[in-house]
Length: 149
Image 1: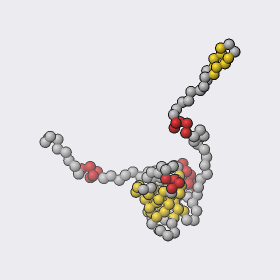
Image 2: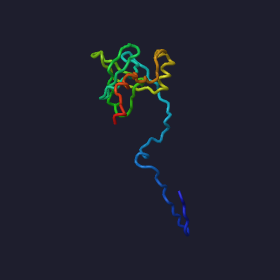
Image 3: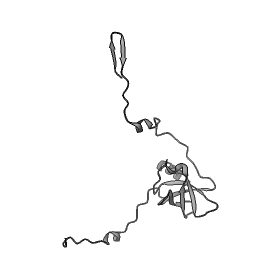
Image 4: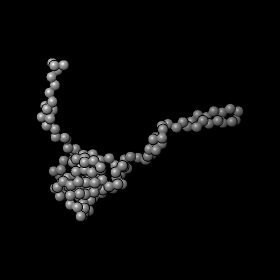
């Protein structure tokens, strides 16, 4: 802020706004705020996302059950939290449909490590994202002959 003085009249120039509309919408709080860790209940389970199916659905592997289920992202999480393959989530099991479940919370990598240290997640579970299994034969299907061009 610059201040100019001319014959006892003080003129102050306003502070220039830096950034546009998105800069002003950003949260001004600390991003490293501590939040409470959520543990599972009786009708819930921890799961790892295996495959994206589209339409806010994932194939997930439930840790306590040892089976794969189709998980649906709840509406409140749909556009606010981005989920990828390999993420650890908390799912709510359905009584009326055994093959499906609902995603109710996504854990960060640090939270997943904390759950593993508490013994909530079995120690043999790999918390890293699973790489795609691509065999080398898929690349050998097409051959190019540059001599005939």
